[in-house]
Image (cartoon, rainbow, N blue to C red):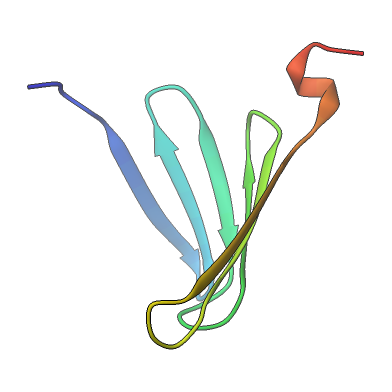
Length: 69
């Protein structure tokens, strides 16, 4: 069984700092509304929980962090 490390700290209402062994991220948003997540590796995610079995998530990655052109 693998050992994992993950820590989430609430800074302000609607603002969380998430940390794991390799990176960190900042999440803005609350409960049922839209949330924006900005990661230390250039990943940005927008997610919204919709009623029922529906949900929406869009992820983009910054080109400067990939090492490409």
